[in-house]
Amino acid sequence: MDLTEKITDALKQVKYPGFDKDIVTLGAVDGVVAPEGAPVRVSLKRIDGKEEAKTQLVAEIQQALASVVDGQGVEIYIGGQPVGPAPAHGHQGHGHGQAQGQSLFVQDRIPGVKYIIPVTSGKGGVGKSTVAVNLAYTLSQLDNRVGILDLDLFGPSIPKMLGTKDRLGTRGDQIVPAEVKGLKVISLGMAVDDDEAMIMRGPMVMKVLDQLISQVDWDRLDYLIVDMPPGTGDVPLSLVQKLDITGAVVVTTPQDVALIDVRRAFNMYKQTQTHILGIVENMSHYVCDKCGETAHIFGEGGGEKEAERLGVPLLGSIPLMKVICEEADKGSPIFDREKNPELAKVFEQLANTVMEKAAEAPKMPSPEEAHAHQGHDHGHDHGHDHGHRHDHHGHNHSQGHT
Image (cartoon, rainbow, N blue to C red):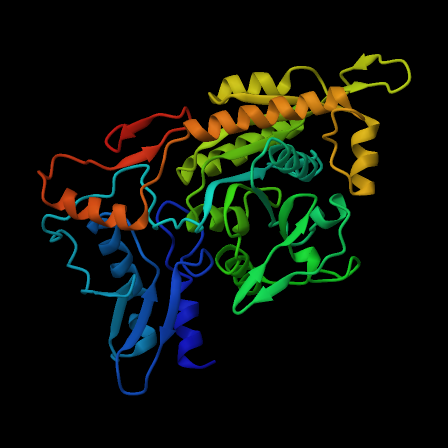
């Protein structure tokens, strides 16, 4: 193992503040350079935290690498700017503490994309991808420019649900989305065969994720719907750290076993200060296609009660109907006012509610605004904190409030 590998391994001992995962796994490390006879250089991505947060990271990095570099010295860069060595404990001067609830890393915007909405779930099997595809398609039918990004990397189902065999194209170093049924579509499923196993470990997953986030030419979109993998693993966590998310849509079924995982997903987004637009209750009830009888086979009202408990809106309830499954297998979105008028109304109401909640969602400052604001904070009294955080009810509060 060469020195660079040893340094990278050592950096895996440095935890991302407030999380159990390390800065390498979460993609905070931009690069490591270990020239012979010169100080080691560790580059981190841009950070929008207060000085105390940066100081803490620098101190932990220095400590983790002390025995590895063997007196060679360590230079640490954050966002391309050199950072001095951490002051001794208890001598941190007038640094401002990172306010609770503030995102440590600057979140980028995708050029030309107005709203970024991940559709997520705490567990698999609740119809998340079906909701994502039909929400995206319905939004496009309401005269919006819409893209769908399939980040369910180990089980990309969006191409099948849209009935496309198109492959991803490139223009220079940019990936060009396929255009399917009025949607711009990016999916790893468009780069592999249907039965090809997705065998990727952590670093490869992060590399693919980075390309799908930062190297796609979406042109101009009103909405980018992101089909997330289920759970609270590396992909959803990295996405909310890398991008300025408008708000997440959390999909569940009414049953208690699904609602438990909704709480886990909710808490991850809350911990990362990501706004939640609301909950969609899928398979809320079964409607017999022959007699029209309704049955609550997964329980009744679970999504509504959970939304109320968590303090977020219930965006909509979607019935369990045979035609939804049949149309998904055929590659046909369900929104069709003539063929499926009742379901079209359900998804149109859902899309309109999502549009309304997205417009009301708190806005993150751009990276440039964030840095300017940080400099403005340093000129104020140490007893004041003028940052803002995302609130799950759509309001802005000062960072000092918890």
